[in-house]
Length: 130
Image (cartoon, rainbow, N blue to C red; front, side, top):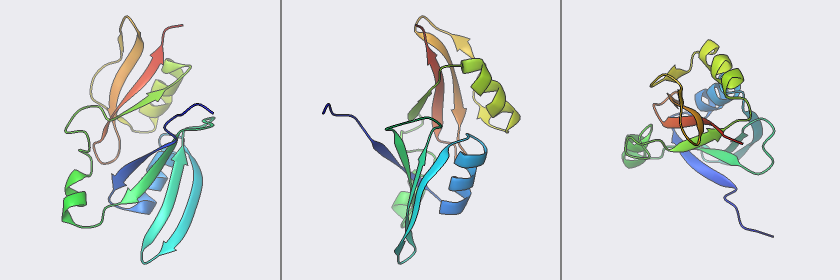
């Protein structure tokens, strides 16, 4: 089997608020929410229709991790949400209240816009050219 990145941990302030935002605003599926005891949970989200990519919502534990919330990539785009219909998803996300950092733009590789999640983590919404 070829290798692939099956999941990425995203440090969040609160499991429930992050889960609700990714589900209700981005339309992600809640794949798993398992209580691990001691206040820890295994909360896994996935873009709709995604067979492999998973986002683990990891509640910050302590000041160092709390300081990284929303800035895990040092202000750069951290995650890339690829789509097969940019304008459909852009308009749906805009109507749901997503904060966009710029206007959509057409580049040589495709159509893209930078947006922020509920904590300020920067993402690209991206449709690559055929």
